Image 1 (cartoon, helix red, strand yellow):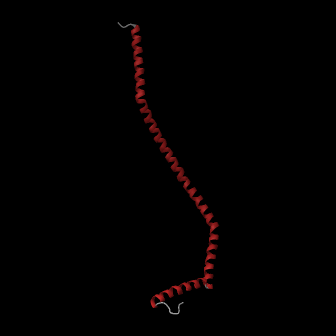
Image 2 (cartoon, one colour; image 1 turned 45 degrees about the vertical axis):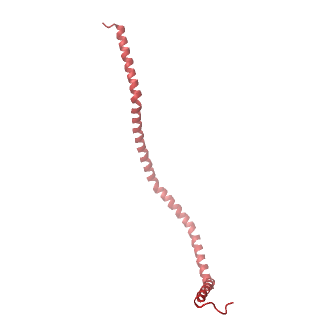
Image 3 (cartoon, rainbow, N blue to C red; image 1 turned 90 degrees about the horizontal axis):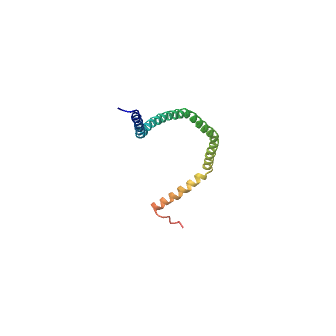
Length: 130
């Protein structure tokens, strides 16, 4: 027959063995289970964050585009009159130089010099040239 003391010892041994098996089970498989759950949770969080960022960017693009466009227009409005004035002055100076003969005179001198060189090459040097 089994005595009460042996029954208690068997029960304690069964509880200790069960506890040891539980600890061993969680020591071996626990990290794997936790890692799997953490990976799943982090993947879900990454999807949520990616979606939120994409939505925020898509919402911000028209605002940024409008602000940049307004800035460019303001800058252009301030710069265009000066650019027009400078272009107008440059064109006026070029026309004035051409009309007064400055540009024509220089072009004519260059043409005579080059033309003389071509004639000298074709006909030989001039005899009255000093």
